[in-house]
Length: 203
Image (cartoon, rainbow, N blue to C red):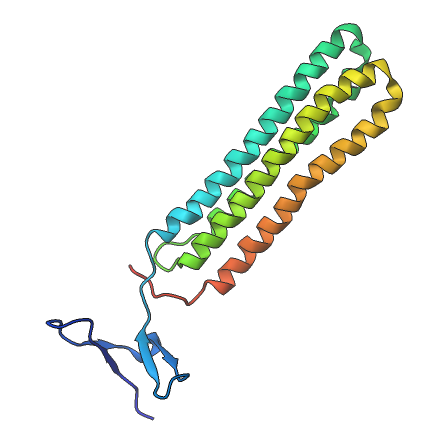
């Protein structure tokens, strides 16, 4: 069969432009088939991808910083009267620091999937959503860890039986950031396959 060539006329006064067959999208849902030229990729799509990279690490670090600072104040105040319990009460600070690692992992993964020229808008929006999901989830988890850690270490110094309960609360607070990490990684990893071939390279 001979190669099919289509001509796209954009407006009056413009000359017809020949479009290669592989750049055509065929739709036969109407009485007659309609051929439309594949649009070039938007250069601004990379902006949304990079915004996902920055929002992931920035919001995750904000949550980690708040959780560390808030828990650190409680540990310092408690350590004046009970210095023997300082190392045992350092757990909230460690759990808050893990939230920053969530953002770091997501940012590195998203950054590795951004490519110039053939990066579609779908991939940009998906990577932005993935970064925002991880960042905001880690921020929420950091707020919870900070408040619980501050009050928990103070109460634990007065009543050691509260230690197990405090750890369980911190675990469920940390799980909020883990949920966001899982969803963010799933969205970022599937965006590459779903967003491929939606546009032609602009460069």
